[in-house]
Length: 454
Image 1: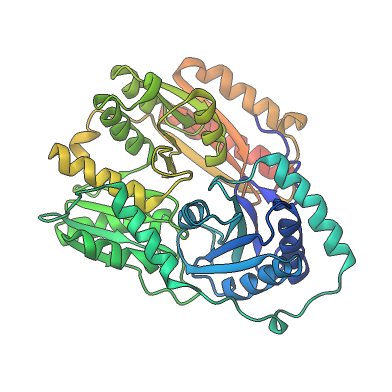
Image 2 (image 1 turned 135 degrees about the vertical axis):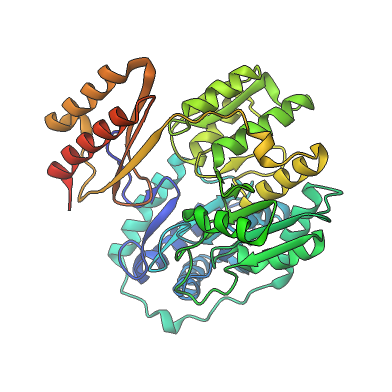
């Protein structure tokens, strides 16, 4: 059961809201730049911060406002332009920046945007650091006058930084060539569209790129990882062996097999875990997944002698558990895959290359590599809420949750949580019986809707 989110600005993946509205209004963005600048190491004479963004219309003005706040504190700001979120994590670490900031709302619609911050080590900031920054941001925002975005100069983009990231991806899978493979890749009109054409050109093969013409408004629009059935259908139409589909900031990846089937993060974890184990690289024979991962994954891993540990939803929490238990692999059903020996955060393009490398080395399709994964029926119902009240304090909701848990017991799971990025309560029910699954999911969702629905 989920407790209320105590954060004021930062969710599980940075600050996210409608662009132009609190907390992504001009004052708060400028204040965020001030707070970040003040948080950087004082021993460094001239701190440097790298920015990146996705393809949303609001990205450039948000970057200009954030950069203005950073410069006010004496920080030097550079920009990689439109790049995937993980590119900034890599570039911050590789080029000695003290921090990296991504302006993106990931899978959200184009009207939204967000601010994600990485430390100079390429890892997302710790919760305690973000909470301390929140207090300073809110303090500054209450003290300063509203700045005019048009009064600040735009941030100049350095295309060489984008090229460095592409080379990093290629170096991560040395020797990979796609000759003889036909692949469909859906870039979601997002950040992947800026790097995928050059990346796949250099890898060869017959790669059909889709949704690579962003216009500021079409990011994630009926495409990308939010709509994997689209690329799955295209794989069949084009006679391809594999489909790849990314979200707006390309930090996650979903796949499609040759039979119009969708292959999510659970299935990717299974095939990569078995490969790492076979090569003696799966430390402790352990994989870290989340509370949302299917029971079928746990069973399939167990058959291969691999343990599965569940962490809270959010790649930052998966990574925390991985570091604590020295795990070499972790991820989420949504397609965030973490490979600490290659990168400090989830990277959809890197995940795609790792899978393609696995296919090339084993001469097996993704369908063959995941054939024994028997997925328990699972449903997720999203309920839009007006507030995030602790669910165990609402008698009607708590009663419905207890009833589901008592009936399902060992034959299913009940996971109820608030989204860390949207005003949603997510009701996930997994069960051997589809009738029981739908009954309890609807009953709990209705109870939440009655008490907290908008």
